[in-house]
Image (cartoon, rainbow, N blue to C red):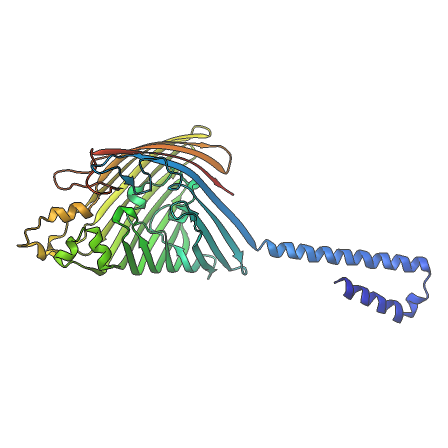
Length: 421
């Protein structure tokens, strides 16, 4: 920029007779004017660079927590589905993420979110990576690695600061433990009077790791598609969702999950149509907080399905928020119509059902303190019970090294500090 302007200035001094005939004072004045113009151009170039940098916005979140479970089993101790074990653990609840939003033009942006968790040894992975394009003021489309929109808080399920619990109720949010998918979503935002709606449909695929709860089985969900509607009116939010997929589990993994019974009975899990349905209601007026969700996961074969739900009620007391939550998950009976192999086999179907089905209820008392506008401290105590009854003997959402829990109850303590930046 400087070379070009000074070259032009030099040419002007040489080739313009009128300038050559001016006095030294006038020449110095002209030079000062040119220098001022140069400074203004440099400032404009700098401001243009800053404006380009504003095209990229960076946000992040961090949760540092610790948890411990009191759940003695017949053989050792048990671990809760969120990773809480018999000793204080900092890995289960510790995670961090950074999100980059790059504006391409007035209608398009690229979004990338990287997340690292203690459970995965803090190996960062791209959790989101998609193009978001506004087809109009009310219709948009996303394509790439996107959120799997199963639950009310799916969009920010890892951002602990965004909700009052240390972790969202596992009975619902880990019923189908899916966070992301590869595919596309088409969304339409509209209003009916004072009510604002967002209707979205999606299609794609996802690989879901069940974790220790189901023996580390990997569920491959293909042709994953669904629809969801979120409606907001004043302080109320209502959400309904439905999705279905063709789900496959490798025979060797399935056999390990059932201690060899599936192989013995010749059972497979190949391209099984599986559907998920969920509804949620939330009220938050800055004085009271209420939230409830119910979910149903149904496998279209012999594998036991499940339904779950929770109800939470909290009260804002300045920077404090005490909260109480009731949760439940119930496993359906095995579908006998899919198990003709059991007839005459001498195998009690309850043996397979006890290994696969899950059942428990729970109460959680929690407390949140807003340290600043972007930092929150949380603590909660969860008491779980009713793992078994006359029809089912399970360990609920606890996994053991072998054998059942000693008692029909267990507890988990969780502490965390959550922040956004």
